[in-house]
Image (cartoon, rainbow, N blue to C red; front, top):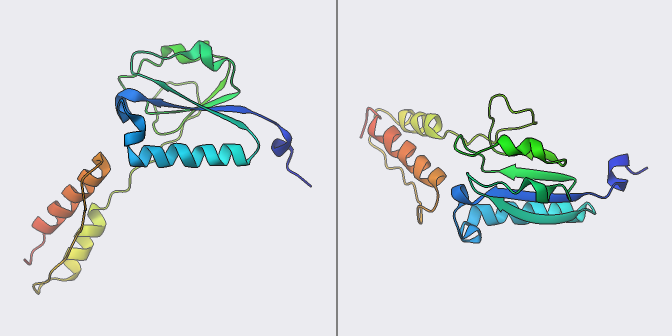
Length: 160
């Protein structure tokens, strides 16, 4: 027996914030993989996929009325969210929680590696050890934060 929701055909949009991702959205490898994976899942479930973008100051919500659902990503405290109530489509906010929004939202929290790095360095005390942390290129804020956490944990270690 097929699940009842699998028989419904939806028009689903993925909407991102150009101010957060950048003007050339597909130059961001992580974002490109996210959009491609989302599209593959939507299409393989038998739905239509479309992509749109907003900025912190512009939100073309009237265009979204033609869709059943949008997944909105990149909302920040600077994003003017007041117009979201003007659309008839269902809105899911992917990557942030804003107090007072009447929409369902979930937060994809970045992983804090610093406790793991600290535990790794402290487990080697009191002897001198070498730890290698390779980063080919710092391409994202998450990578820069992870490298900073590694560097702080290394500097705070009681043994060299």
